[in-house]
Amino acid sequence: MRSQPEDGELQDQPLKFDEAVAKQDAAQNGNSQGQNGEAMLETQKVPTVSGDAKGFVKAVAAMYAPDRKGLIGQSVFSKDDPISMDFVHCAANLRMENYRISRLSRWDAQSIAGAIIPAVASTNAIVAGLEVVQLIHVLDAQAQKKTLRESRCRTVWVRYPEPSRKKILQPSSLQLPNKDCFVCGARTARVSVRAFADWKMAAFAKSCVQSAMGAARPAIYHNSSCIHDPEYPEPSEEAEEEGLHPEWSLTEWGLTSGSLLQVEDEGQGFSCNLVISEDPELSEEEFPAGFRVETAATPPPAEDDAGAKRKAEEAAEGEAASKAAKKDGPGAEVVELE
Image 1 (tube, rainbow, N blue to C red):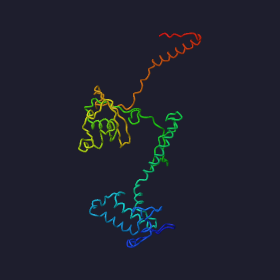
Image 2 (image 1 turned 90 degrees about the horizontal axis):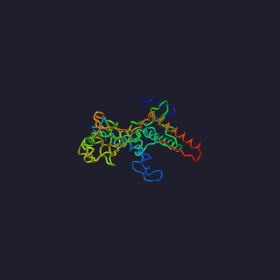
Image 3 (image 1 turned 60 degrees about the vertical axis):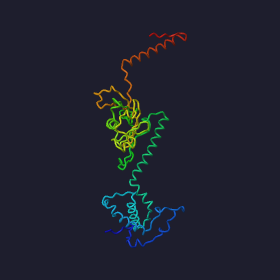
Image 4 (image 1 turned 180 degrees about the vertical axis):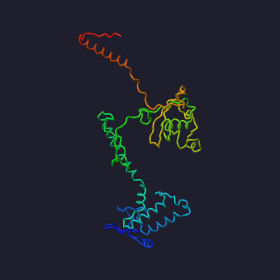
């Protein structure tokens, strides 16, 4: 039973089915045009209470129809399912009528029902705004001849819907790129295989791109053409219809040393370039898998102490010769002996 309404609380008015069917209101004839006098679609018109009552009963009857009998108890709401949408729209309008709230058209109800997770849209808007702010910091740093780590640019984490210390945004300092990461590394990833003819495309994608490089569902492209699709990991008629042949070797795909491949992983949201080359002398003991992955540039060799000392001595000798030339006058000539 419902408790007595408190002062100021809106009390609902029970609505019987017979009364609802017989009830007519201004919405039946007064909503054929919009505010600007434009013609409205049928779904943009607010139905009558009678129409909502009849639509609710009709939707419930359709849910128990023989063709939907298997969905009873496990049906999932979808705004694209007409029966589900009719049920929700009519039930919501009848409930609003109980509390004397303005009812909605099917168009408005479907728009609201389509926003199942409003937090997603809110988070996307926040992230888009943060990206613009950080881009301004990057441009400002370039104008002032500063590095990114010297700028005001930050990595900002959106802690929603579980904020940290009541703060949705949590900034942190920029981290240096990981030289071993083929996504944020300084150079394009390079892969060397022992023999192109020995590697099938499916095996190359699984062993090298997925296992060694960490991709989940990589798609591989060569010259803007897809040569491996994660949807077709095995040879099949469907794959052949799409022009894909997972059983083909790298040679059959026309790859040669220096070929540039593009790897895209939609599951992880990144893409990178991959330079592939053939190295018959690849050590079997050091690389038993038959390939070698290089994800970053090789740093320049460190200079030993002897080399640094030799450069310092040469600089000192050059400075002494310059002073001697100035002391002897403008007509003096300095001869360097090797």
